[in-house]
Amino acid sequence: MNLDNQQILYLQIYEKIKHDIIENKYAEHEKLPSIRNLAKKLEVNNITIVKAYDILEKDRYVYKKRGSGVYINNLNAKKNVLEEEILMETFKYGKLEVEGEINFANSNPNGNYFPITKFKDCINYVIDRDQEKIFAYEDPKGYSGLRNIISKHLKVEEIISDPEDIQIISGAQQGIDLITKSLIHLGDSVIIENPSYSGAITSFKRGGAKIIDVPLLGDGMDLKVLKNILSKKKISYLYLMTNFHNPTGISYSKKKKLKLLELAKKHDFYIIEDDSSSDLYYKDKPFSLKSMDIDERVIYIKSYSRIFMPGLRLGFLIAPKEKLKYISFTKYHTDISTPGLIQRAFEHYLSSDSWETHTKKLRSIYKKKFEISYNLLKRIEHLKLFAVPQGGLYFWVKVDKVTSEALFLKALQKKVGILPGSIFKLNEKSDGWVRLCFADVEIDDIKKGLKILKESIEELYNL
Image 1 (tube, rainbow, N blue to C red):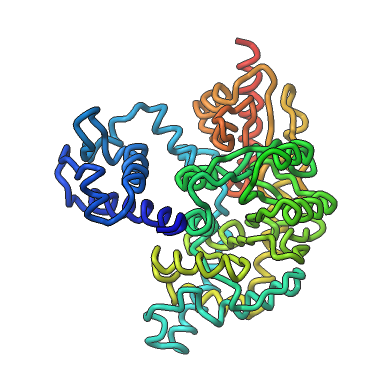
Image 2: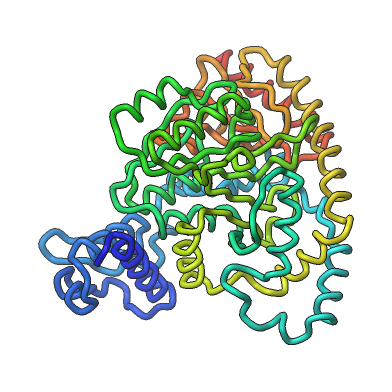
């Protein structure tokens, strides 16, 4: 059994046992088969079962008794964990709930911006047009009409990609997970930015990768540190966000983008480019790393969640053909295909002028929010901005001599939500950094919320 299949198998075993636990097919505290017996039954290596059981234990679905075996956990265990653990689990998924007030933690767009009426018309249109085809399984790669229109849109961004090289995915997170499951082998070295997107960190960890983080500067990854790592170690993949980075808001310079492509070719690794915010530019539209990729070194992930309706879970992925076949195989065995009704309705939406109208409107709204937020933030004493973004939804800020956790708790007491930087760090240390996102906050609440943040900082300094 080769390593690709071995990795896919332990994740499949993990998912199957987890599913059976959730569906109450096991009794509480029931003993699972021994590693040796289950490996023999499934005709896999013992290490495959060990890794599946380890992830199940980490996610609290099972517990281990030394010298005895592996047992099904109390199905209500997640309700009994410490409040701090619940808080951190909430942080990791960016779903902090702040009852009744102002949430700078949420990065999803405000529901008032959703083009519901227009999209409803698109749904009705494609139901009449395509009839029963809508409710059949789509091509695992995605509905051909949607892949065709995406290919046309990409040409405007100087990304030349045949529709056959496009894989429709259910959001950027699924794209990262598919890459991890299908391409990243146990023990492969993967470089990420510091700070980086928490969902990617979690996915790579679960895939058994050896993760190395490289500090970010104002124009992108610190190339001196990166080159030093590359001189000593074989790297398989590098994951990054080149435009309006989450959480820092920075964008890579053209010079640094070109240098990364040069290093990828020289040291024979692939770059995973996560593009979730490049449509939200305030001045000039940035170009992706993929648009400069002449050597097929970039695996490009594009999500529509930040600029459309996140609950639709739509995005796409472009990869070299020899990589894409494994990703498409894994997509099929994960959920067969992204729902056809959503794909076909979105294809109709993209084919009209509605998309440009919608994105232009959002850029105008977010630019105004950005300007107001920036002007207020730079007046707050003791607060330092990492960079001044030229687009996107985020500010990465630091308060000297005050921990981000203390500031988080103080602001939360006043009904204002922020995210401590530990969520975006491989070592889970915040180092005083905080992410602020204005996606879901209206202008009056931005003013009110940042005033409260200022008061919270002052109170902490006067303790």
